[in-house]
Image (cartoon, one colour):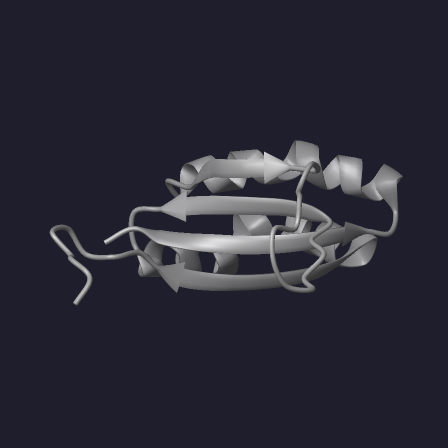
Length: 102
């Protein structure tokens, strides 16, 4: 079952964050991750949540996403992101094939 990493990023150091943008995709690809959304443009439709830079990553499984999060290839880029932004990030599992609302 697919899993999704949902990320809201407030960039605090654009120069260092640009380095992260260049470094992160290779590690993501090695773990089978894909960008689903990677946008600065957002619009609140309800509520009070104000996203900044919103990213959604897809992985084949929850475990594969955790593998990427903890892999050596992502350790350096992760430190860059953490040093150059404020980030909220959650990992969620998708719905199983054939799932129907009850």
